[in-house]
Length: 280
Image (cartoon, rainbow, N blue to C red; front, side, top):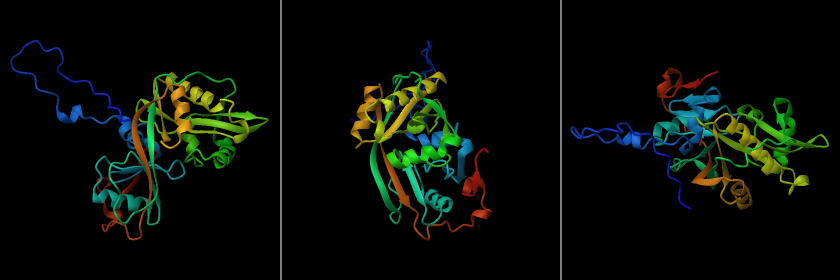
């Protein structure tokens, strides 16, 4: 299925009635302005999630305790990869999505998978009476559920990214879903998982709908990512109103030993690759 076309921006100059002089066409840069979901990690870290970001040069990443995603520029250059190496460190892991170019030849690829990005205007967005909010005090239970179900990256501070809801049975957390990436105007639903003991009861569907309801109440639009190979999850999301926006890829690579910029980072300004925290 082809990638969906990004929504066009509003064009200036509409409504002109005087045919002379001719109306200039919109600049190419404006016509090709990227959609926030084309590079959602970067859009989030330069927008609502800026307070989670660490920056070196043009490279942005979430704090490693929050989520492993790192954002490259749309057209990364040699210095950008050097800044990735300096930010992460030799032997460190880099996790990317929506990447357009392969990493340098000496960077080891340890994981690569095709994925889908899906969006919805509805998604059965209704609250669920059994869903309860989850917070920092619930993190040990959440990490235990993630370990059993493997929904994807979930770290000790991931819960800080947005609203998480769960369902308990006999006091045990058996299902959850929540919010992760937050580009302007959009919120990603993530961490959707259900314990084997309660599979088939529709808890994932209900929790996705409840999280989507909260997103819609804020005037934002839900989206999500899934592995293209996880056909059961894709079918579930389609059944509640999600549609394919684009195909994407997920990639994890290891920074090789010696992949460090030759310039001393301590002497460089923020635009040239020094490490800085963005926001608080």
